[in-house]
Amino acid sequence: MTRIEAGAPLILTAEPILYGGHSALNVSWQRPRGSGSACIDRYEVAIETLLAEGESHSDVKSTSDTSALFLHLYACASYLVSVRAIDRDGAEGLVSTIQSKPTLPRVSSAPKLINQQNLPPFTSTKSSITLQWHVQNEASNCSVQSVSTECNFSYTEGYGYEPIERGRANRSCNARLVPRLQLVVAALSPYTRYLCWGWAHNEAGPSPAGMPVPIFTKDDASSAPAKFRLVDLSGGAGFRFGWDAPEIMPGRLLQYRLRLLGEPLYPVPDHCHVDRSHLLDDLAADRTSYEWLGGDGFTNYTAWIEAKTRSGWSPRSQPIYFRSQFRGVPDRVTNLKYATRARANDTNALDTTLTWLLPCSLRGPLKRFEVFVLGHRANWRNHSFANFVPVDKDRGFQKNERFSVSLGELKPQFTYSFRVSAVIEGDLKGEPAEYTTEYPSGIPPQPSEDYMKSIALDRANVRCTTSSFEILLPLFPDTNGYVQFYAILVSRLGYPYERVSRRFVATSQEPDGVWPNVSSWREAMERDFQIPYQVTEPYWTPYREYNKKKNVSTTLAASLFFCVRSELYPGLRRNKGGQVYDWRRQYLQRLFADQQAQALLQRAAEARHELRGAHDGLHQRRLRRFTGFRREDR
Image (cartoon, rainbow, N blue to C red; front, side, top):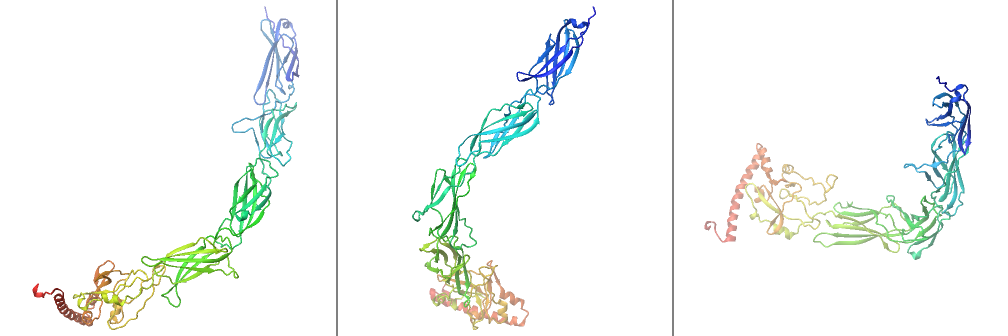
């Protein structure tokens, strides 16, 4: 038997409707025509829609009626509707399709706050609240046209200002899905609790409002503390300040701070960099007074007070002005300097000068300076004295004026400590500035006559050889400083020389002074030793004892003129390494060819011969006198 296939149903309508507040589609059709329609058992109805973001939605119903109702469809979505007849044997007939009109729109779901780890759902400032919304728009193909937010006043914990009751914000979006939308509600009150919610708008109207969210705005700075005043001077012990709490307090009061700026009533040198401001920023929030024990005397002060909330510091209060009286003692004088210089009328005498500048903080009218001098030297009595430098009030003084005092010549090689203090009215003396130095040595005085005699060598006891002899010279007293170096000068007997004493001339290369320039042996010899020449090298320091008395000794080349006629010629001289070299012999050898030099050598040889005989005779007589033995009895 040949099967007859059912024809395609004739779709009459695919009508969008609202059913129970949800989008629905009512589909109706007619039975197929033809002989095959008698065997139809049921109809299979399918709907499907494809959304712009790639989502799809479909549904299938089986019914024996000629209509079907599809519920819970996407709003604002056009569905493809297909109807197919199925006979009793399950064979499918031809299919009929139709594209429906868009389903009816419905309001969107309420916006929700984003809850992500790195994105807080809301933040606030002292005058605004920022909310991060997202609109899920489930089961809807309708576009969200805008999102709105409203924040309503709940209460405030501040005072002194009228809170804002309400704030709103709206933002357009025109998108089906709204994953994130930021709204800022501005012009709100600080330190206030608000309840905020949001809703979305589409072509069906506004959505239901979301759950209200309580949000606090942040603190704002308060007004300045009120009625800032100087209560009293506390009998000179300090300064007591009083104030009232700020009149406008849009936040939590944390603390107060007091600022003071001083302007001294005395000159201050330009090199001083003293911070005369004072900051007291740890005054508790419950305080309304404070006693300040600081500050410098003789100073004008300006004071302010501020209050702090979590937002920061308030503006300054109205300033108050006051003057401190004499408080404390002066600082040290500054830039204390010491100098010595030779006197104009006597270059061997020194003048000592101290100079200084004003203290950085006088703390009162300057009256005078006090200078105390203390010197000490081992085995010598201390040397001390005081001096006063008055200040001429009528003349006044400048801020960078340098004060000075002349102390004359002090004791040589004493270690001096100079202390200078400023004294203000009321005889309040400040801490001294101190300068310590060793005073320059003076010129050694001449040895005493008794000492000179005690170390004089008997001519008979002079240690002479054929080529040298030794002399002893006196040590100079250390009255004017420890003697460091000696210089031995020799000239021909009978030619007077000028006794000259002078200080060494100091230079930048030689701060201790330059060794004087004296004639050399050659220069003296060319003038027949009528001028002195220096036997020893510069900075020469040998010492020895003779008869338990210290002295300076050296060895010179011997000649007839010393041991017989007491006339000196140059001789052996020690260098810095301690080696001995005979300048006379080397020099005469170089001039040996010269007739005058030959005659001089001859005279020296004769003198040595005579000296040897005289020396032996003296030696024998001295032995008999001290030992009682003759030479032949030994």
